[in-house]
Length: 204
Image (cartoon, rainbow, N blue to C red; front, top):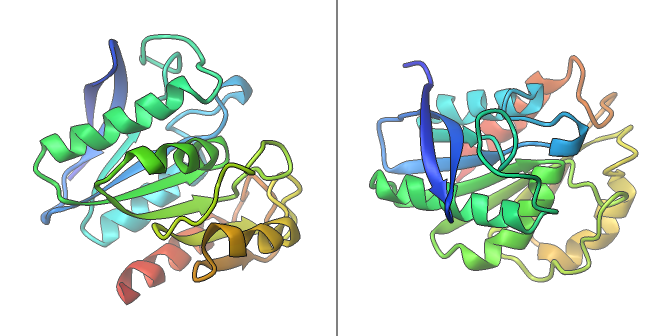
């Protein structure tokens, strides 16, 4: 089944998303990179995340943050975008989904990390290239939902060594997977992201 365009509410704003209904009760919210640097739900890494979760029969929802594409509003400095993530999770709950994952790439991972404390229904969180060299992650402490982090060996925005140092404070049981030969944009390497996530979902 192809993704369908949907609109859902974030506070008093309407946001544009793409929804693919899976057969079970599991769903995933997928967030995109920085809106001020051209990030949108049509990003190559976001698309690879959708593919991996579709294969695992999840309902997938990727969406444009406020002010991107046909989503109403303006860039919210990462604060408004947390409300957007809450709206996306509530939309999936409204479809009757009970097991919800939260996955974000780059800026999306940073927003999700701030929103997770307000999302009771999210069971697991994955961060792809959390931009630790570019944005402040000092707020993030023991987060049992965070179970997997993926970054590129050559990623200077999400350097593996910086993430390794921070990881014990986030969740000492989380797994860090490093994609060899990949920088922050994963050109030609998105298939490896899909394989890592597929393996992670099979184990769970």
